[in-house]
Image: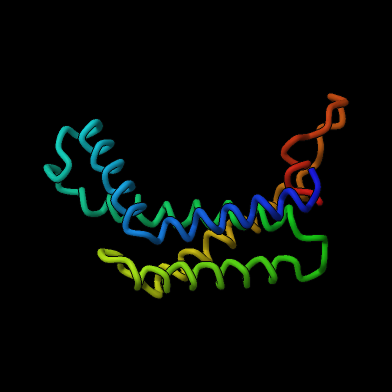
Length: 153
């Protein structure tokens, strides 16, 4: 796949990240968490670790959104010695903008700690790509390794 397609995917994903800053996205996530919690535990707030699980779920969304951003940017950008730094800078910028956008939506809580969690997610995406790029291919099968193909470029 060409780097232009990956760049388009990254830009689209940034749009999804910015949408996640809205009140509507927050309401959808809260409703999904409540339904899943009810399904797994019987009552949304009836168990002692509800707040801890809610916090972990909330911050996991940040990590996953930005991990995917890191992978998409890895695929979109040409190989350079400082590619990782460019991707981390982009993750920091997008994460900061995302948190800033929350100031304009009722019920949203922008936080500096979330910017760092977003940066950590981007970093995990970069580390994943670096690890996969260094992974040896299975030369015995004669097939291209799809995981390494994702990381390399």
